[in-house]
Image 1: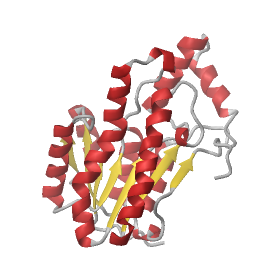
Image 2: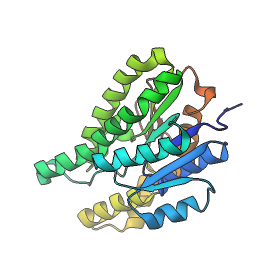
Image 3: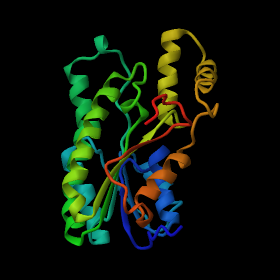
Image 4: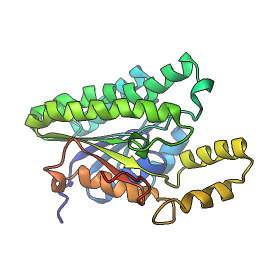
Length: 258
């Protein structure tokens, strides 16, 4: 299969760790020119060391000014962004009764508005050249709510509705919009979730992890590279007739057939 990613320019937000980094490396290894951003310069430097020539930009995707600066820097280096991977750390865990307006507002800025703002900035280039890929890293919570992730389960569904609507609008420009829905994956995020569940239940993190694995048909958590494989495929020419989808990569844990 020919991915035809040579010399395509890719921006991966939150690309210095976990699924973001695995996705950036996947595109890099396929021949694409890669830019990443992160709030941590230390993490950026460590990530870029694996990808000579990678453009690494410090910034917070929940901040509109930082998004403008990140996209401008990457676009200037690459003369436009061909592929955008919208990724960000998940909002905090918590039950509905524990969340106030400030929690919701911060989560909207991080999870929804970061995607809207970044896409708005890269879209004109994609439409002008009649080729583009927008890939959103989401969660299986949009198909089967994850206990305790009230903010994530709620706001990621807004992103999913936006993505499907946008796919309909930009399809005539050959700009494809798809969503990758990771299940429980071995990242810092899952460690945070396990720590929260451990504090609430009194169980050890190891007990929680093993108990969760028994509920997954493949009997294990996913690895970031397994999520990245789908993202890279969706960004490639090989996925030229796929748009408006939300595809889970979860070892079979979501129990709905679609």
